[in-house]
Amino acid sequence: MNTRFYIRPSLLTCLAVLLLVLFTESACNKKLSKYNPDFIGTWRTAVIEDSTINLTVRSEIVIEKRDGLFNNTCTDECGERLCECISQQGGRAVINTDHTRLKIGSSSSSSLSIDKEPYQDSTGQWVMKIQGLTYYRQ
Image (tube, rainbow, N blue to C red; front, side, top):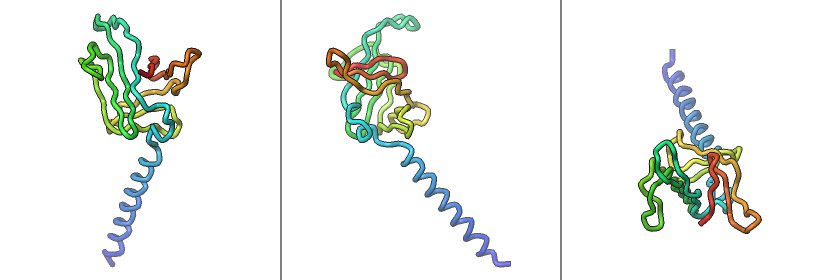
């Protein structure tokens, strides 16, 4: 029995699967700013009272050409960005093929639902709805 015959198909199969996974991962997520440049900018929610933590909070999404930042449930403003946040996620900003989920960074568990893409309301203000919250371009 020729063992080389059995080893080569296994290596080729593994290589093919690896290439397929890499291609699928890159094909499923498109750079957000390339898909829709209207996402680029700093977006913030209105200030609200969070009854769970008894604090006044707001959230922020910042989208640049390639990267993004999500500051969730923040209690303070430190310069140009919100701070004292319950969670922060930063990294590459991508959108899935259905254009329904936004992912910032490498964590697969932290994608955000896109309820409404950026649009201009009747007053000319840029607005988008993410995770059920309304964000306004700053």
